[in-house]
Image (tube, rainbow, N blue to C red; front, side, top):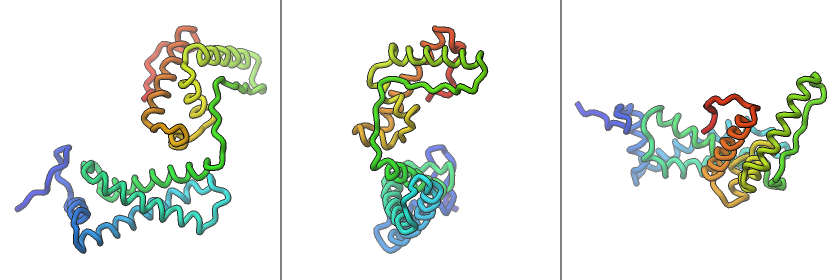
Length: 218
């Protein structure tokens, strides 16, 4: 009785997963059929994500959203085929592949939503405090705002300030910002992580934050 090839985690792949992997690298009819089946899976994923995020594209009609889903499914097929060797069997193959469709469609929607919007790279924090707060809360918020504003100005490099404020305050999607700046998501994540670490250290030093590990930091 033959055994299935193990994954990198040492767990044998289910037969269905191994069939996917075998067929998708086949140069004949089995391979072409597998790619068609894969695209069906990915099209379901891209349609689901695009319709879930359709409020970000208020001017887009049904036909435009469907066209975007089809384009994203094509891109997702290429991405999955390129990354086949990284599949470890921690989930079913179709579940693993589905995520490519979801991610690629999400990036495409955000890119479309921002395509005509100017991206400002602010160099200073504009702080808005809710005037409806109690006097004590209002005073505390104002004090924290001044401390944070000073830390941003004093502790961060100009590049760190612009990236932090664009991503956190202006809510620019990281994929869009990376594309506009000719950078990468990883580079921007690193910049954001370093900026947050500096700000936390400054606010701890000023007594505005407790000196506890930042477990949420990447």
